[in-house]
Length: 314
Image (cartoon, rainbow, N blue to C red; front, side, top):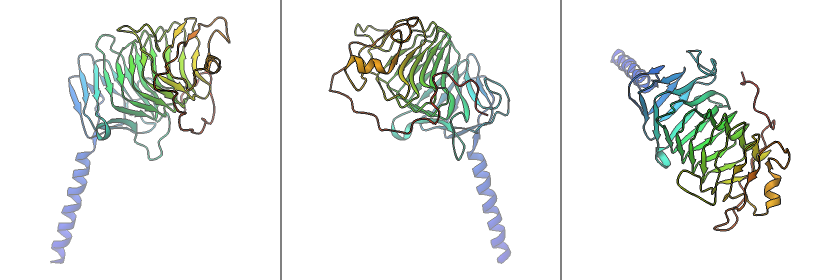
């Protein structure tokens, strides 16, 4: 009888271990044809969605990146994993329990634990909706690609929550972009995203614009294909908007926690500080519904930066 109990115990343990192993799914390195992800997906090396393939991530999926790990030693950072999309990514979560999560799998997660989501298809836009993206180097890197990013929470990323590069014309709408180390949104290399109805706060810099880029952050002469504004841009530690380009930037019809132009300008870097830079055109401001309330105070980042990190943290 005693030996039978021991045997049953061994069988039970083996079954439980087998079930756990079966439940833990690891992402493949290359996706050549259409694929679906659901449940809990672990990423331990770079994942490439090739041209012609669509990766669909189901509501409620958790995508966990092993921290500071890339078994393929490829991509932008050979020490950290990323998802590179040359085809298409459809990550449409739902509110509450159906949100899709991209995060570090570490027990003590840190910024830059993984590299980020890199979207590279210039023709077919990817979709990120109702997602949480955190603890990456660049949360979402729109590299020559123009995805729709909406109703997402993008936080705790080292370089940027969203980086638009190489003529990226992303639509960035109704997101919470907070607590990113260098900037909430970076636009560079002739990128012109449409940015509207977002909360951009508690980043070192809210929005940074480089070289030939010209994001549309809001215009009172709204037409299809432009931004209606209505962004809440405030309480970023160095600048709410930092214009490194020579272009004038439309940022009308937004909320700044004040309607006083002098107070708004205090937290904007543009031609007022450097005549070689373009002007941030922030008047008129959006005032419907009264003045917004201050964001909940958080600790300032340990080291404020007005220039991007020169190298990835190892």
